[in-house]
Length: 338
Image (cartoon, helix red, strand yellow):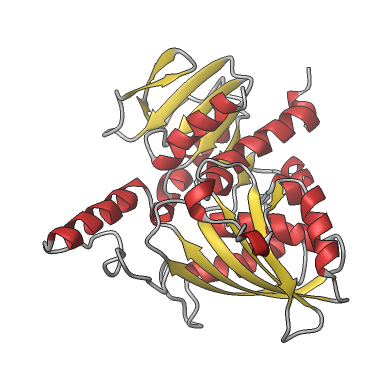
């Protein structure tokens, strides 16, 4: 399999390299692409050294089978045809194409088959907060149709990139040293603070991040589910957390949902309140699964469940989900058979 990574020097690009190595993804040739600034940078992958090439218009993707792409929306739109015109499948990790009708939006545990219908040879990776939520919601949907969801997200600094992580660490040092605090990546100081805004506000008062959770969930689940989100940036480095209230058509018991989580793809049940055992970002960096805990009946809604989940949003929320899409294609798409 000839594989390209576009945006290889970024946080997600580096995670692609780690995940591909961890999962022993079948790679015959690997090509790394980046900006002019990143060109010439070298990275180790499975004992070999690879040099980043500058992304340019032309025929660099002529022999590529799968291109994992984590570049900005503008760059991705500009180079879409260069990447796909020779037949490469572009698995894209940003927002540019997610809601396009002719681009499938895929979470393999939920709607893997959608990846087969890709007229533009593009498959979109959903937003990280959406990915971890729908993996858990699928377990409920299999029991009873979900009418609506309320969700509060607690999103780590790494959701805004590697430079945001570095800024948070710098802010903590500056606060403790009594120095002026550097604020660049966020609207306010994030250290020792919470910021109830992720992305820009839209006309209805929700942020773009919150509206992604509404629109993307419907597309992925092929459902009329209504999602109302409040997205909050929190001063942790990695792993997003979510508090979820889900209303179903019929009451679903705690026991039913726990069994569904235990048996669900990509899910891990961690729910023993008496032992103070529940998912936390501190312990889940680098983990593949979506961890679910604090499961209980919603005392304000007889048809409701409420629960807590945590996932490494750089891994499952980005690189791992994309690699899992590619793995599914290799196993199920005639294009990659034989």
